[in-house]
Length: 31
Image (cartoon, rainbow, N blue to C red; front, top):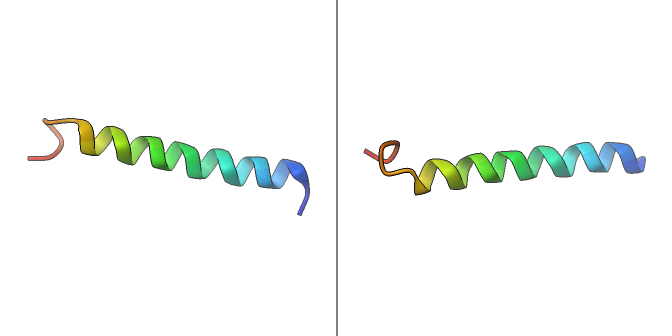
């Protein structure tokens, strides 16, 4: 695996994690 591929995979995981954290911390989305 090249460095670029791992960076893409990491950024994808990070954006997914960030989206989930935003979703769970948003009171309007948790109802």
